[in-house]
Structure formats: structure tokens, C-alpha cells
Image (cartoon, rainbow, N blue to C red):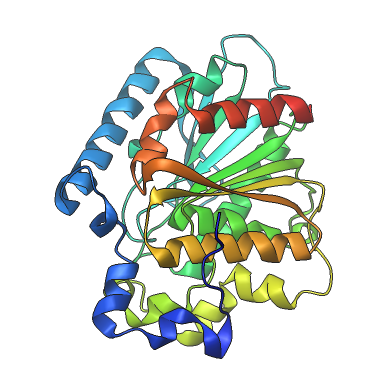
Length: 306
């Protein structure tokens, strides 16, 4: 495929855009072709609530498990039917522009993965305005530490994030695990429709609740920080799949492509995949299906790595 137009810094395409165009580029629902923007958002959260209730009713699970002392430090853990503490774990971080969504609407992949022998943890975190970006990154870090300490015999921890959740997962490339006294058994990353350079968001309405300064954006932009990193601070052998839907904005395509290239230059085993006919929401909604290409990639990656 033709690579999206590149640009970090002065040549970044978004810096040449009008405020109206920048707003459109970073409004994922406006690029959905199968329904109207408001309907796409409503349908996504309704489906998420429905599949989560179904998973809670049909799968062995532990709900609202505390991974820290804060009220928002909670996760839901869904288990395969077999008795073991040596499962591979997939941790999922929901999207919602760091200001909406919850673990109670995000269990899309639970049934297809648990039936294949993968334990799934849907991680909650404090969205804005209660939570700042730094706080959310800290929560995600601590949720991984919790799983590693609680299940030290795990057969690998895999991180999957959607949209803002993909950003939070990607910040784990920069985590200092020694500060937490544990080296998590990270084996792979699935980054879906993510944002990796947050500077363009500062000038959009998506920043109204975040109140993100330019300094906040730069500190929490893995694209910028890894771009400058002299050596990979995490295990470069971890496979990383950076995904984006066909029906997403050029800026979402550019961010995904550039982040994948930055990872590759840094020595990670990263690959880029554009999913045909998918948009920002259907790319996750379809994880309910065991024959969906992303579900199959996840299962194949997890069990090849064991």
C-alpha cells in the first residue's frame, strides 16, 4: 500500500490544516460510511454493553477486581473453562478519547479468546476529567504489574488497546518496570486505531475535558519519545501489530503507519495492517467473532509465542 504522508515536527501535515479540518481528522465517527456518526457511536457502546453482560453471564469471571487502592483501579477477569493459573493473559484497554467508555462496555473479545484458552482482563481506568493522562498511564502500568504478581506462572501477557486505549498500551514501551519491582512477562502488543502523537489533539474539542497542555502531550506521546530513544527500553522481540481500519481518517492512518515505522527503526518486531471495509468502531465490534481476521491473528500470535 502507499504509505501515509509522513511528518513529525515542522513538516507534520496536521500543522497545515484549518481548525475545522483538524477537528474532522480527529473525529472518528465522521469517517464511518455504514451509518451516521451519532448512530455509529451509540451502536458501538450499546453492542459493548450487550456483549459484556453476556460474557459476565456465560463465562467464569471475577468482576471489579482491585489492582490498586483507587476507586477506579478495577478490572474484570474472564477465564477459560480449564483450571489453571498458567494461562496466557490478554489485557484490554478501552477507547473513548480518555474521557468516556468503561470496562463494562468492552468485553468484545472475551468469548472467542477464553474458549481458545486465553484469560482476558478488561481494565478500567479513571477517564477525564477525574483522571489525567499521567494518572491513566500509571493505572495501566499498575494493572499489568498486578496480573504479573497475581499470576506469576502466566504463559505471557499480551496488551490490546483501542483508540485511546491503544495509546495507553503503547506507553508501556516506555514503562520503568524496576520501579514496580517486577518484570512483566510481556509477549505481544495489538494496537488498534491508536493515537501515538498527542500534540494535534491539544487544539481540538477532544481536549476540552483533558485540559492537556503541550508539555502533557509531548510527555505522553510514545511516537515522539521513542523517536528520540537511543535503544529499546522494552523487549524488542515482542511482536507488535499496529492496525487501522480502511474507513478511518488520513491522520489516523498516518499516526499508525509512522508509529509502526518508529518501532521498526528502534528494533522492535512491528508490523502494520490496514483492515479492509473496517472503520474505527467495526474494527473492535467484530472481535466477537472467532473467524474474524484480528481474532485469528491474536490467537495465532499468542500460541505461536508460547
